[in-house]
Length: 109
Figure: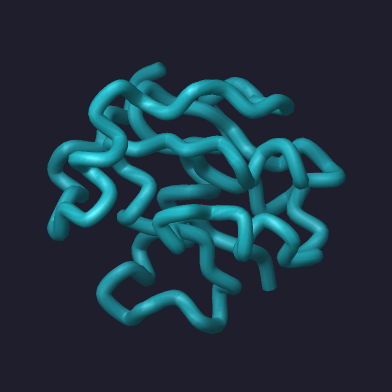
């Protein structure tokens, strides 16, 4: 099992989770973060840090977001590691509560 970044992160990219990760398992895209399942040690400290509740233990991931398990793994292999917190995206607060954001995910960095 690992932790997974879900849809709520799209358009926000708050990085509070990154600063507490002991193994640098987060990777950064243009408008989304992912967790590398190979690097994640399943400690869970990142879960409580996410202000939009976008991080799940894989077993707790909502059924509608099950594809994010493979998405995190695929994008982590392509995107660079992010090891320190940065500012969220400029419109993060507006995106935070927006539903159905998957179509807005930018898969390039």
